[in-house]
Image (tube, rainbow, N blue to C red):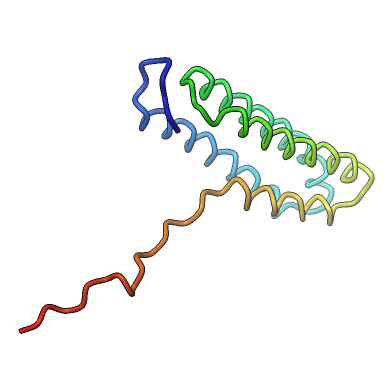
Length: 128
């Protein structure tokens, strides 16, 4: 992220985005463990929460003048399109598809794990 337009330290902006994302991921994870009827009842509100989180993220990035805003908006739009299509299927009783999409959404939104240092690049023991 590159920030240009407002006086907000980049670390503060990243922390705000990460906190919002963690809250969203907690809600999505909770949905995955629900019985089918509860899943069907909660799925639309999770879709609404994803939309709200994406709007918040995009608004913050716009204020910050982030250069990657437009590709991120396109990515968000494709995710939301899939979620809305799935919401219709969940309403029709296709809970399996809803759970698949929920698991995929969680994987997409979860930040990648930090990579372990490459063992081949680690210096060996010092000679005696």
